Length: 418
Image (tube, rainbow, N blue to C red; front, side, top):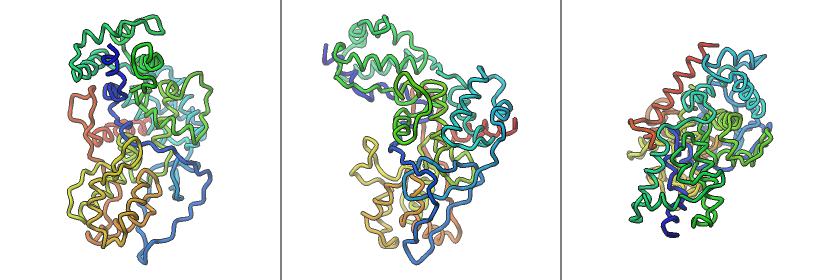
């Protein structure tokens, strides 16, 4: 029986059933490093040729302090800030939002704490993501959640040649809320309920015959479907402004915490994109995925290689770059002589792919300069990452581009309400 229950100890067992349309949790989330009021002195060029400048931004971005990784970054100007944010939000929020005052106040509070400018563009960006991810439900209901969970448990049990009814019998043990674990799974409605269930199972691992220290497999949640890992990294670098009774994980599943961390991951980093839709793509695929996908496109053309333009330049394991070379690294190796960089030099620069500082590295500057020269024009510095979305809740062929365009449509409608 203990071997049977150990199958539930895998941290990845039910990760897919808890993964939202946005696969944010699949991205590595380094602990953010804060640079408060940091000077924007650019790094010196690494060759005799000037490095290409980043595309000018027409969209609002966050002024310092920001969550970035060194080296210093240049932050583009933001749109005008509203004199009275609450009055502005009363215009921007969709009519169906309830309780209207609660959502409005939590948005204003989050922006103030994160030092994000109170502009219509920034508010509409967050509003659009909330609409897409939860239609302003603080704890979104997932239709058919018990079936999804039992299906995943059944698949896992099948790998051990254990019938699902035997697993259900093992989960008849009473849980801390008075119900059995089986009853709680049978009656699951929301992601928060599922998170609470696995928190209890993790705490009672020994009693259930599960490995001690079993991790909760629920990785994202709340009205903006934020990565728990991101939230836990964020509070290590930026003070969480609200009093809390539980863990940061619990805060992610609350309205105020979900808005706070969702606003942070969407807007609290400098990205010189020409359109907000590329931020929406980053929200879905990982920070700077749109910029990195454009870099991959340039590398693919220069090296005559076929690359997946997914915005991931390295292979990752447990959130850290792995020892195996990625397809992007292999393609860059073909350009070693033209770039004048060693493999070690390129790896050093590629490790900044999740930061604003990547555009100031020798590797980025020389690749984009060669790409411009080969095309006889300035090539794209931003493109839509080509990623297929995977989740038990998705029955159609959806992509990051679909997500970004869907959210951008809501964003444009919000700006009209202004």
